[in-house]
Length: 120
Length: 152
Image (cartoon, rainbow over all chains, first blue to last red; front, side, top):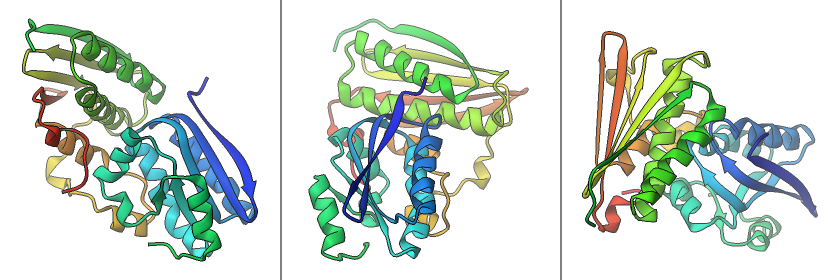
């Protein structure tokens, strides 16, 4: 049984991926499949809500790196929100906030799309 | 912090589904010895990264092998030694990753060693007679600069 899950939710033309549990080398393929599913369905405005994410390693960070260019080429973006501070610190350690929108709330992430604010 | 040295060991099969067991081992051993949570988070992530690299690169995903961990908690530092019998890591080929460049090239890997180096105070690696061993040392000072913090 996996200790990681992804739930999908629509917020207008934005798709929210609520991720829960521990994202490591074992579970990262599940996030990868979830993002691929969105892409294949033509959904490119993605918000990853990490409020229930308890752990992330480089394998999890790698999923964001692998897809960001492709999603942005589709005129979309992957925005990340609601991270616990211990999780944000891992993103921050490697400089992710320099190229990814990482915000505090889901509402804020969705509004970045609504305002047409372009990726960093 | 006043404590005698304590050593814990763990042997796990070389499959990523066991990484959760590795993290639990690190967290519980360190917590039991009174190591602070910030240091525990750093140790947990660094050890996970080292084991994930062994599983993926040294053993090439072959789950029939073993990863051996020894964690020694002293009064002023934690030493984790992780041993495998797979392919050795070529340090000469290692280049510090750039997240912007990796994202641009749609790469998902290459961050693990950098994370380990950023989080640990000392990292040693040796390979001899078919045995590879990485040693991670975390000093137990209260200086917050040794914890998971922003890029320098």
